[in-house]
Image (cartoon, rainbow, N blue to C red; front, side):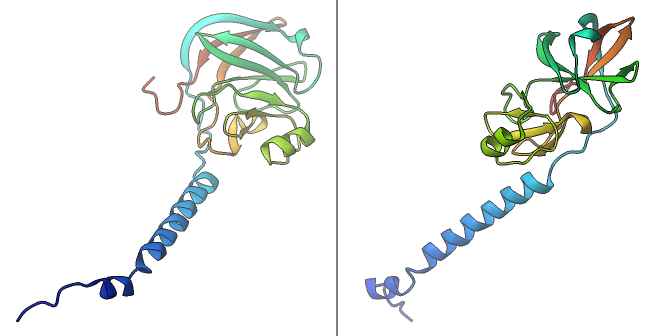
Length: 186
């Protein structure tokens, strides 16, 4: 029995398989990525601080109102201290005022997160409507909620921001530990 040779006419009968397969593959990839970014966010766990040097961060009087922030560096990592309206698991409280600190290194690709205070600017720039000030990464538009322990609530970042261990002595705020970055063996 001899095989019939494949000719151009026979080949052209099946040309449609290539674009259809490519289209299904592209849509499948987009669906997988969108579901991962939307539903694959890692939840905030109990604090897991890696002990470090006790370092003065600020005086409580430097943060006058809720969501005021102060940038500082701890153990070579850029960080941000925030005054919050509500206590969180890792915040410290003095006279009814709550303070929390987070690494400013985005857990997606390591860009520097910034405070987002203006809801309209955040909606326009990040395409996400915020109800209170949050932290945002301008590189890939991830948003982190300080009232939810730095949880990633929007964008490509899947992990929450690492938190800092804070303590108070009088009206001074000290940092004494930092959570390891996600995926590190610290």
